[in-house]
Image 1 (tube, rainbow, N blue to C red):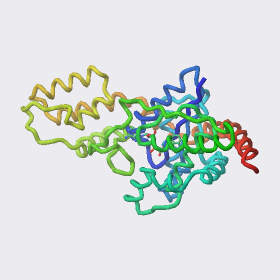
Image 2 (image 1 turned 135 degrees about the vertical axis):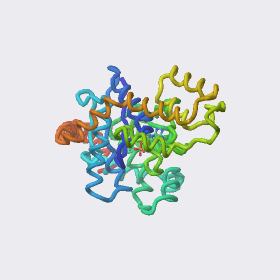
Image 3 (image 1 turned 120 degrees about the vertical axis):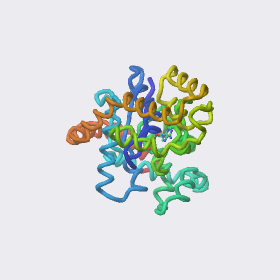
Image 4 (image 1 turned 60 degrees about the vertical axis):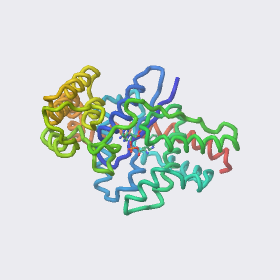
Length: 323
Ligand code: TYM
């Protein structure tokens, strides 16, 4: 039996990259009867970027609604809000004290965010140790994530191993699970899809807005409609193929290579595909966003279950390190 754990930061509504890179793989793994699972909303992490109480709350709901819209079963999965389990922040402090400052300085995500964001706070810097605490607090074995989180997982393994070296086997050392085909979903501009880069595709948006975003934001070249096109050079084709079934992607590649098939046609197909594929999750998402009391109820039950595991781990840690 393996324990699966992963979280989504509540800095906005999860986008296509979050869904294909983490939400769907994690839910699939949680359905395997051999596993137990902890899936959560990383709302403490989002405080590094969000300072409006209203937005913080609303985003927490939209991440919760997304997990449920894609089929998370709260009866089988421990589903909770990170901030409902303050034991996590205490453990993060201990981990901070065992991890070298020089190692944290090497974090790519800190370098990236600190070069782009105005608010470069200390929380952004120690962010990887809060993430390590999320994982170690629940003795997780497998952590499904996108490629951008790999270094954070390495740091988690590193801090766990350092502490295990000093205090024998205090922590389970987790493993990252990355699916090759979805490890890095591109945004509308071809860069990694990311909330902070304004290049996301939000599949929960209404059809009209989705159409506008895809038509306006996905960059294509200006090869004329009649000319053959190379799908391998096209971000639009890449986006289509991560959502489509293999035979659909194969057909589009064939159409592009043949000529007489323009980018406008390909965009239309992508819009139709997303609308068809995400129709049911979109309805469920809207249902939960209109019935937040249901979300509160589900998350309250999850918080109790998570807390009962967390308090035991923390007691083990406190006893071992000398408190
Ligand atoms: P976050 O919220 O940025 O992203 C959530 C998950 O989505 C994946 N992801 C992507 N996958 C493929 N292509 C993309 N373009 C893409 N963008 C995002 C991320 O890799 C991630 O798996 N620090 C984490 C949240 C977190 C966490 C944890 C994750 C907090 N504690 C403990 C796992 C375990 C974060 O900011 O992810």
